[in-house]
Structure formats: C-alpha cells, structure tokens
Image (cartoon, rainbow, N blue to C red):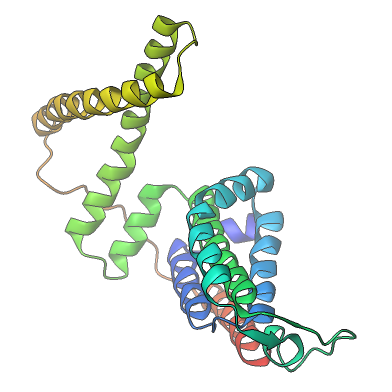
Length: 249
C-alpha cells in the first residue's frame, strides 16, 4: 500500500477513465467479462483499502438505482438464449448447457457495471483527498469552473447532511417516535421545504464569508508533481490487464 500512495494521483484518474471505458464497452451479454472486471475491483478493494467492507456496503447501496433497470430487463427481455454461447462466452465450457432468459444475464451485467464503477470511484476517494483529485483533474485539462463547482458541492454536501440530520432529529423528539406513515410523508415534505429554505440562507452566509476572506470565484490549485517512469509503468500494466480481460473473455 505504501508503494501505491507514492503514485501520482493523475495516474489513478487516468486508470479510472480507462476502466470506465472498458466497462462501458462490454456488451449486454458479456457476463464473463464483467465478472472478471468486478473481481479486479474486489481485489483492489481488499488490497488497497483500510476498510474494504465499508466501501463495499457503500457501493452496493449507491448502485441500488441500477436494480430498477435490471428488473426491467428481466421483465421485458424474455428471449431464451444459450448459456454456453451467449451467457458466459465461448471460452468457458459448462457441464450444463441449458437456456435462460436474456434479461437475467443483461440485468446481471448492468448491476456489475454499476457496482464496479461506483466501487472504483469510492476507492479513489478513500485513497486521495477530493482536493488532490480535483487538482490532478485540472492538471489533466479539466476546466477551472467545473473543478471549483465540484469542490464546492463536495464541501457543502456535508453541511446539507448536517442540516437534514438536525431537522430529522427535531421531528423525532417532538413526535416521540410515534407517527403514522401518512403523517411521516407529510412531515417529510415540510422538512424538505424547510431544508431548502435553510440551505439557501446558510449558503448566502457562507458565500459572504468566502468573499470577505478573498474568494474570487476560483480555488487556488496546488502544485501536482509530473508523472514519473514508475507511474507510467504501473499505468501500462493496468491497461494491459484491462485489454486482456476485455479481449480474451
């Protein structure tokens, strides 16, 4: 892990971009390829992260939105296909060469794609601070305006969660945890409106404080070290692994 932290953060961003392109290029029936790529992400989580279980739970929770698309595929795509020729690729021989609906395979591919991409992004965020990631992205050509907006969203997202948590705690204390589902939905709607109003007021105060401290619509960029031969070598190995998984599975 120490050798990984010595890598340039720009290499991690380029590696994430390469992995994203490889995942997007997988066909809807490329189940074997996605299983291999998801296994690569799982290996990176176990070897690089201090809390792999936490990252896995977070990535599974965030990828739950893909479950809707996967279920839609299962319902709509009922065409039977051969597991031997379509589902797991021509490189793998199965003792049971039955048939299954195409929706199950394409739905599984969608879930693996969503989980693997989110897990890679969470892993990158856990290894490097968001400020370093944005500085590296700016050094790679990301516009200054987009980088500043990302940093502000990341910063004030925590403040929004704090406001929402305080409002929810106040509702629970005043209702003594005894309220029906109908009242819960009504109170949640009122809380969202109150949260929007309070967030606007707080954002104005924060903006005035930033201007008084010298903020001029841009955040200073830290110096990012140039990439070394060691960095390019690690990126080349990662790219070769992705190409092998994409072409031979």
